[in-house]
Image (cartoon, rainbow, N blue to C red; front, side, top):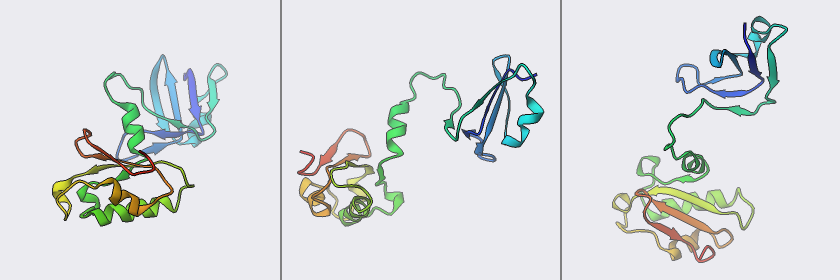
Length: 157
């Protein structure tokens, strides 16, 4: 029978056909089942350790030590400035920054990533002055698509 059950969780399955579940059952150190909370009674016995995750997120285990997990996590909280996200000009970048600044308290950092000057109408990198026009109440850091160039506004500098 099952040794450990994590339930009431936000389980990220990495399976595109069923991307989220609520329960993970583990037997002999291996995942036995990923399912909804309704399977809890069927899987547990008197010796099963049961942990209520209270809605916390459970991710698959990572073996690869070179996954840049921190960078991935950070990207989830940054503005997507890639051309395929309809970023065609510095004005589009400024609009994204303005929209974000209205949703964040003053002083909160705004980060963006993925702009490509070759796809911008101006055919150049944004400048600190371009970013200053978007907001003067938030420090801003934009990262080029290469990850090797950054632009900051005056407040960030």
